[in-house]
Amino acid sequence: MKLNTNSNSYIIIYSAILVVVVAFLLAFVYQALKPMQDANVALDKKKQILYSLNIRGLDGAEAEAKYGEVVKSEEKTGEQVYYICEIDGQKKYVFPLKGMGLWGGISAYVSVDDDLNTIYGAYFNHESETAGLGSEIKDSQAWQEKFQGKKIYSDDGQLAIGVVKKVENPASEVDCVTGATLTSDGVSAMLRDGLKSYIESLK
View 1 (cartoon, rainbow, N blue to C red):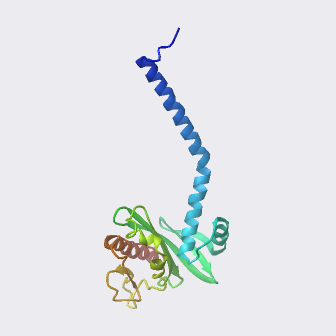
View 2 (cartoon, rainbow, N blue to C red):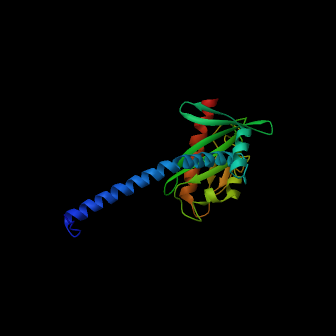
View 3 (cartoon, helix red, strand yellow):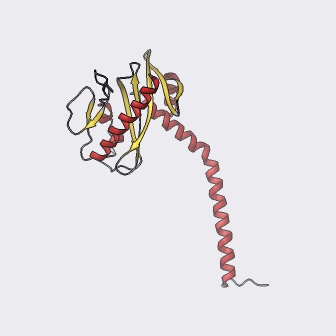
């Protein structure tokens, strides 16, 4: 019996078979590539932690080796994960933070000295901030480096770290990203809420 390739039933059956074949191929490719994707995600996370420790410019193998050298353990306080590291014989804590920017989520890894009050380094990331404005929290290494040495608490024990339009307390404050006030406000809130939570739990 000759198939009528112009009939509706033929077109429906052909389309259904094509959809099933394409779906199978996509699922196969996804499963085949997933280990590589997972490895890349894990490496990117390790690099971000190293960035927060002011260690940059390493390729994949170098980053893996350096991470194994400086990150001594992964710990938990409640549901929060943090990392204990060692740089030049000095203990550092690395705290993962999450918050909200103008258009979506923002995140950070912030390293803190053993005094739990002095920021050693910071790396910020975002999901969808405006290119050239809010995205500068990730793209500008110079801006991230402004956090080095900042105090989280003032001498009288008040939470002082912040991102502001006008710096009045240079020991604890960083000027906001130009043209990205709401993103900067999100970074400030993320730092204050996140660091306070970790530090109060550890103390």
